[in-house]
Each structure stands twice: as structure tokens, then as C-alpha cells.
Length: 227
Ligand code: ADE
Image (cartoon, rainbow, N blue to C red; front, side, top):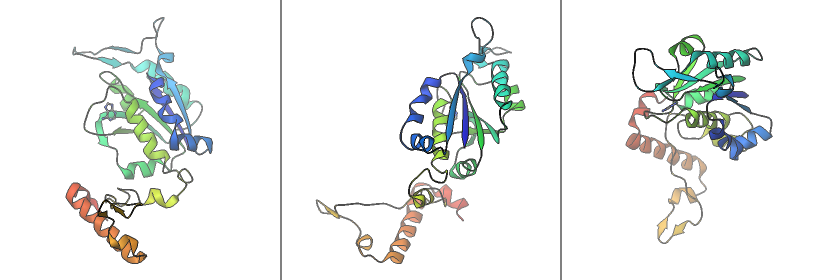
């Protein structure tokens, strides 16, 4: 999978993509991630990328031309399955969206800043808009990092233990059951007997029950969509 990201702060995204699982995915050739500095497409000597909004109001808006020129330049080189705009005024990212995106070949992500982007960019180029939650970040870069992490770890071969991504919280709209490791007794706080029993069908039943219980307590809204 190839992911291109248009940003006004490429340096903000360099570190998250050069560590851990994403780094491993890149080294294995399973994911390629390219950052594009919007400023390089800025207008005039000052490489202007934003301007005040028509109709008045506080905050600068990212202009249409620099973004359109950057997108058009990338589209000359390949076809994108999705052009995604990270913005708080969109549907919230969930596991199902991450699963769908992990199957794509080429994704282009646009990160916003300031007051957002000129609406015509959204109308003309964007095929999907994603928020990572009901709060406002300074820019879309951290949101893009979250999206890329959630998607890249699902690409087959990225996580060593295939089973592990499939049993994550949310894969079946349930939160994960509790997990334990050694020691089985920590200062009198003991691990549930069932997990030490070696009876794997029973352990699976216990895990399903706990996942359901935990979901009911913490995120009952997820049970509405539980299949
Ligand atoms: N940009 C600013 N806030 C955001 C959010 N919550 N999700 C996605 N992009 C954003």
C-alpha cells in the first residue's frame, strides 16, 4: 500500500512513521509513506498557502490553488483509491473504516490547519472525510498519524502474529477481555483460575463473556451494532 500525505508540517509526521510497526511495515515493503510539504506549492515569493475568509470571521483558510496543484501533480503519477481529508467535522474513524482502507492500493491524505480548507477542495477532490474524535486538534497531522497507524497494522504481514490484529478490541464491535501474564499471584492478587486451567474451549467462553460484560459497562452503544 502507498500512502501520500499533504501537510504544512511534514516534520510533525516524520517521527511517528519512523518507529515501531510502521517502520517495520516500510522495511518489509508492505507500506510506503510519502510526505508532501504544501508550502512547496505556495503562491508567489512568500509561498502563500492561506488567506482570510470571505464574509469575515477569525482564522485563516487554506487556499484552493496550492492544494489543488499538489493533488493534480500526484494524480498525474497514479490513481488514488481514496482522497481523504482529516477534519473534526466528519464521521468518526472506527475499526470498520480502518479495515476497509487497509485493502486499498493508493491513498492520499490531506491534513487541514487553521480554520480548515476552502470548501471547493472538499467538493472537487475529497472522496472521504474522517475525524478521529469529537475534539479539535491544532492540525490534521496527528489525526493522520492515528489513521495511518490504525490502517497499516492491518495490512497482512505487518503484525507478526496474524491472530493478534483479528482479536483486537472493536473487530467484532466488542471491547477486549482482560489479559494477564506472570506472576499468577502478585501479592495476593490472583489470575482467574480458568486461565490457568488449560481448558481452551472454556477459556474462549470466559473471554467472550468478559468482552460482552466490559462492553456493556463501558461502551453499551457498541452493542447496538454487535453482529
Ligand atoms: N483536525 C483537527 N481536529 C481533528 C480531528 N478531531 N479529527 C481529524 N482531523 C482533525
